[in-house]
Length: 276
Image 1 (cartoon, rainbow, N blue to C red):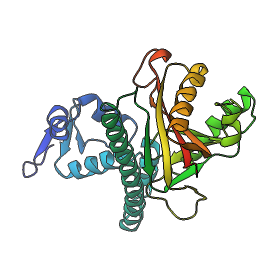
Image 2 (spheres, one colour):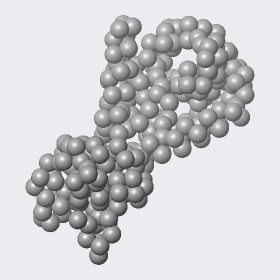
Image 3 (tube, rainbow, N blue to C red):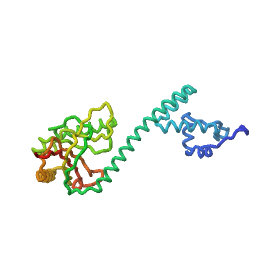
Image 4 (cartoon, rainbow, N blue to C red):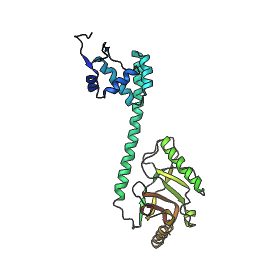
């Protein structure tokens, strides 16, 4: 018999308070996670207001990724001491998730910024600009790799960026040496790279030397890169420069923003030195 001094709620009423459907409460009862305070002889279920806090803790633990099985295990051994330990564990998980979300937010900000900048570029222009020193994170050396080795190197590099939380949102590019470019081997990259505007300690980085860089844009598939390089060399020689040590390539528009490879845009940055 119901205690008239205590307010009880039917399954529907309690489900409304908890903002879930009735089936969720019935399922929790079936697995022994949260049973009604009272079940009368007619099979009606009644919940007390005190059980709302119980329900809210279950939802809290679910929200941070804890499985119903693990929640059941805690409930079977619950105590104030175990609860404090559990809350401390979940607090650490939340802190880690917050750090991960901050990284994701930073990546989104960079991708928005670089895309907005790209919208104002004139892809027919070739310019010579001063570049400040930049910090890059590099892959292992991939020069003279086969197509199969190159594909694996890309996959390994992306996995490494994810594992070490070094994905900054900037495009992954390729570094080619002066010797390979002069030989016409434009896609024989020595390293993959990604810019690190805020490098963290404990990782090996490459410093792209500050200085003059000639910048141009290649529109279309990579097999046609030679035509754009020829244009760059022409301007470079006309302006009295010679090729420096490294050339950097990275996509401005790729499959994320364009359907056809003919519309892809590759940014080419060639280190140059004034001929004395």
